[in-house]
Length: 241
Ligand SMILES: Nc1ncnc2c1ncn2[C@@H]1O[C@H](COP(=O)(O)OP(=O)(O)O)[C@@H](O)[C@H]1O
Ligand SMILES: [Mg+2]
Picture 1 (tube, rainbow, N blue to C red):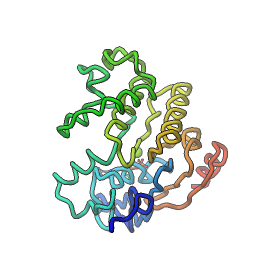
Picture 2 (cartoon, protein in one colour):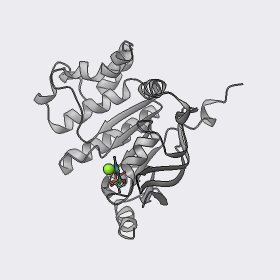
Picture 3 (cartoon, rainbow, N blue to C red):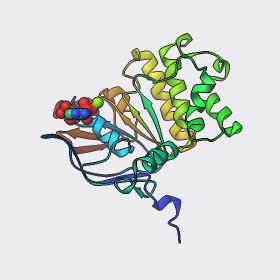
Picture 4 (tube, rainbow, N blue to C red):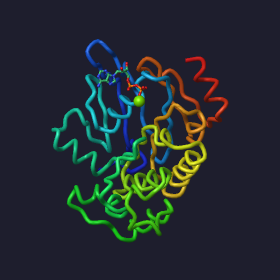
């Protein structure tokens, strides 16, 4: 019998290491991502946050240990199968938005589907567009949009495939504080209303405090986890790292 949805972890890491030459960017990380949860990953610069995200999302393979996405052990997949798994099960939001400037908003949003040879489920596309507040911007091109609007497009693009997990790497890093707050509030709303699982990498305590739980990385290891974070509690914990 297939395991039921609730027993399957979306993403899990078991004793994962990733080395670059002599540098242990990740050093024995074990973690299971709770389904429907919003987890922030924090740590000082160089602590391994981006490496964690790259390994957990299947962009990269661990040097040792096991990463599972939707039940599949990514270390055992060919490059082509790993790419397909990522396309189907994972959504990404990056600091730099990574939109195609010559395509309009709708074309950017449906691009991951097109790359996978799929067409959009119109009803879901419309819901995503409405949720991120872009219904009246579909024919605009990214250069005609504000930073906050561009990040909304990137979020819609990440959601359109109904991924198991959305990974966001410093998604508010290029935004002013007010716009950053708006984008974080929107991410929180998407998690609460759609049950989307979200993993957010950030170095900003105010951003991390929107999560259900915060993982703290130092020297490539998970050194602490804080549930129900507040900006003050997160900042205080960071000072001790
Ligand atoms: N492609 C790479 N080549 C060599 N070293 C790297 C590479 N990526 C990351 N590192 C090293 O791994 C460590 C963790 O980096 P990273 O995951 O980017 O940390 P963070 O995102 O927390 O700033 C750092 O010491 C960094 O210099
Ligand atoms: Mg980084």
